[in-house]
Length: 108
Length: 121
Image 1 (cartoon, rainbow over the protein chains, first blue to last red):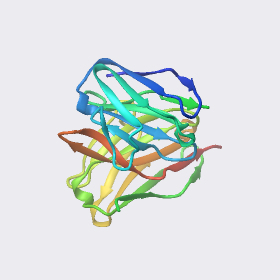
Image 2: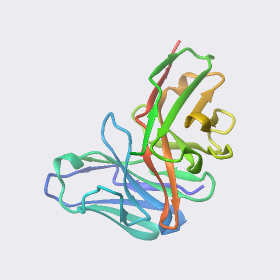
Image 3: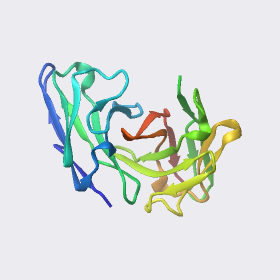
Image 4: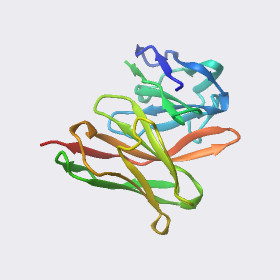
């Protein structure tokens, strides 16, 4: 099983600052198979990034993804108030087919 | 617009059975895998399994194999998640989501709004 470990668990920042969220895999993940989601309280997750670095439709360009192998990063260049949420990485491959990281809470 | 609409919240007792649904619209239901994801209170996302409505090919996470049954009725564009005997530990929010599998990657989009299942005596 590929385990995804996200860090930090909680990130405290202010609007306008830059956020860097990490997702580390226990085994190498093919870049195409790494995605990022945002979840706000009381809402379903929303796709942000697929293929490690491609933004989903409608996602602002302040969100960017990068990385390869076992280390992946989600960067939010300038935080807006609506960006404070929980972020999950997800990989495809192996058994089970899909796994999620435990999440990073981005708080003000 | 591609949309997944899930059935409403449920309150059940331990040992009872339950089937929740996820109705799709705006795309060809038979041609895309639909996955189910559990989120226990205050916790993260856990992938449970996935079904291809076209031929009902189903894959389960080892953690959920034998604990739930995933099915689909392509005639009404609806996927299901069912339990034969609920436990209090099944209390959670359950999401369905359409899988996209392309040369650019594999991901879930969109997601249903979630179905809250509460199991309590």
